[in-house]
Length: 341
Image (cartoon, rainbow, N blue to C red; front, side, top):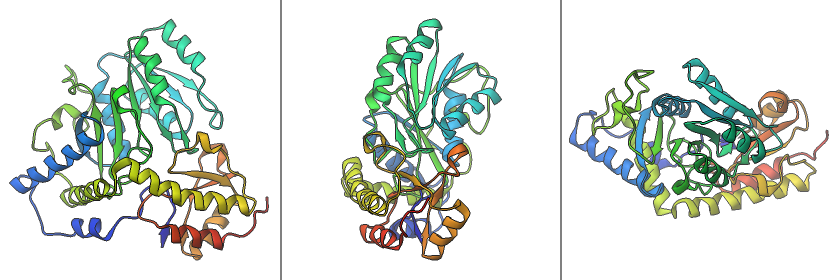
C-alpha cells in the first residue's frame, strides 16, 4: 500500500529494521549514546536550539510546549485551520489566558489585526502554525516573528508538517514543536520541542508527564520508547546523508510536481496557489463523496487523506511526504479518472 498522506508516512527498510533490533534498556550507556546523537542532529538541524524529546504524538509535544513554556501568559493565537484552532483548546483546558485571532481557512493571515492586538495588550507568547496541515498553507512565520519581537513577546510555532522539508526560520523563533514521523521519516511515538532558551522550571507545573523541565537531564524521567528512538536516529542519519532540509525539499518538490501536473491535466481544482503551499501537501477538489473516493483509491493501492470542517465535502489531500518515489506518484496520477464535480 502506498501512503500519500501527510503523516504517518512511509519509512525506509533501514528505519524499520532499526526499530526491530535487539532489546535495550533506557538506563544502558548505549541508550545515552543514542539520545546524544538524536539531540545532536536536532541541534544541527535547528541552528543550535535546545532539543527536548518526549514520548508520544506530536500533539502531546505541542501540549507539553504550551503548558511548560508559558510562565504567566496571556498568549495570542493565530488560528487559520483545525490544528491552530486546537491550540486554543489546549490553553483553555489548562486555564491559560489566551486571545484567538481567527482567519479564514482559505484566506491566510492578515498582519493588521495581529499588530493591533499586540498594541492593545502585552502578551508573553504568540502561537502559530508554520505549515497548517488543514489546508497545506505555509505561513510566513519569519515575518510574524519580527512583529512579535518588536512588541516584546516570544513566538512558539507548530512546525509538525514542515520541519525537515520546508525551510523553517529557526533563528527568528523562540520555540518550535515537531515529531519524528512526518518530514523526518521516523516512526510515530516521539515528539520534540526546540527552544531558544532553557526550559523554565515553573513554581506550579501544570502537568506531570508533559512537564518539559523534567526531561532536561541525560536520562528520561519515564520509560522511553527505545525502538522508536532507534528508528528516529536512523531516519535522522538518512536525512543528513540525503542533503538535510534542502535535499528533502528537492525530493518532495519533484514528487509534488508530478502530482500537481497530473491533477491539473485531468481537471482537478487546486485549493491554494503554489506560492501559498507547503512543499509537503496538496489540497485538491473532490470528484465524489470522500468515503467513495477514499475506497476507490485504496482499492488501487493508494491511501489519500480527508479534509477537516467545512472543507471535508469539497477537497481531499495528498502528500509527497515519506519514502515514496516519483514512480509511485506517476502510477497514482495514471490511475486518476478525469475530474467530474
